[in-house]
Length: 283
Image (cartoon, rainbow, N blue to C red):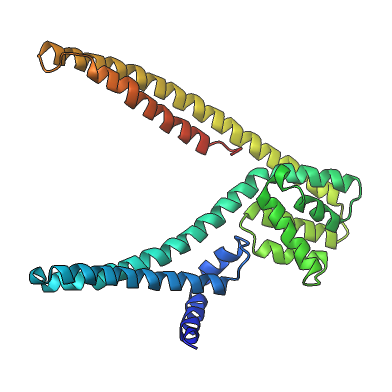
């Protein structure tokens, strides 16, 4: 019985933030959004109580030094902790949705190529998505999950394949996947040639992929040239500083040079490699 008021409150919170619900549905989690928001509010309240109790215990140990500002800081810190927990979980859902969309976009051209091959062999549309749902290790788990969702709408909700495609595209995290499903539904529903449509989409995405890879290579070449120039100039500068310090008697060894070689250069190399990897269109 004590859970009902909180559940009613969390249901009201869930109804207020429609964007969070939309992002959550695009993540394809197993639990419902209402249960997730209930747990989020419960964690936020727990964080509030924990910080409030810890702050009260701390003040109880130093009661001779408490002023009004210090007393007010405890509930403020507790409210801040609750807000951090709540909005941290909301942000994680939005980040997960954006990440899934990026992953789907990366592997979509390869999945369309596979679908085009099946269309040439007159494989039924439902069977196409069944095959795609079983090939997560090849085309990506997120594309496989989207295909699985379409099949579940057909098998569990009793939808026809066209209705399932339209419903699945409305809650997809990838705009490119949404466009693909809309196009397939339109072509298939109007009796058009699905193979021709997939071929056009494949060629368009292949060209975009080629341009992305070309831009990536150009960026890598530019960044590499800049980095190597900076490393060379920095090494000469560090050696000069070390020489001046030795001549002034502030140093008696090459510690600055060693610090640059052991710490600064490896750290810079690590950062530039991470930046290059993050900008790779195939990752």
